[in-house]
Length: 215
Image 1: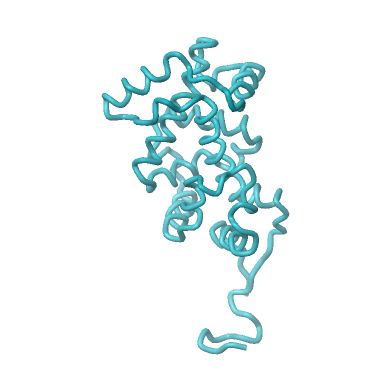
Image 2: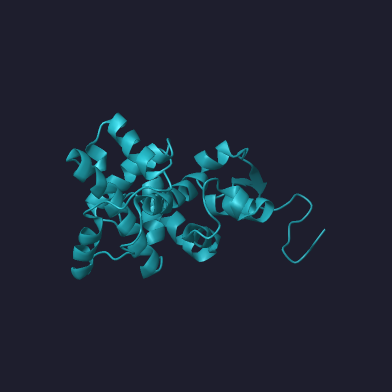
């Protein structure tokens, strides 16, 4: 009998065979998504929830999720089909408060900057406007938007978000890019791009039908 490898099993094999840095392009080894993808219990939780019919976010608000969906698709095309935002939301629902707050701050910054520049949230921008914003944010010297610190402080006082108000737009972009790239390249679509062949595995090897025997 054969079965298809689960997402978690494919990621574990890639981690074991390639190393975390090689498995996920564009993601720094220190990024929190590496720890989450290496944690079998957390991965199992997220994978089980992905299969549920209810696709509503568990952690993110509707506006935050809408912004993440739009940002994900622009940063890594194909993210919508790979359900990147849903997977990130599920990982966040069991992540540490510090990582949760940092990602919320990054979404807030990347969605607040277009409000300042164009008067609309990121999801409502034209493709050219989205590209312009992301090009600016991707530069190392990307400034912190004028209203960002005040906005984050106001959110903190309400107990909703917290983050390093000294972070630049580029810092927020890199944080989001790590989450999005990690989620995308741990999906079957993303791993196929990395060379995954859709391997199948036997439940029991033909010559080994008992767990206690080794051949």
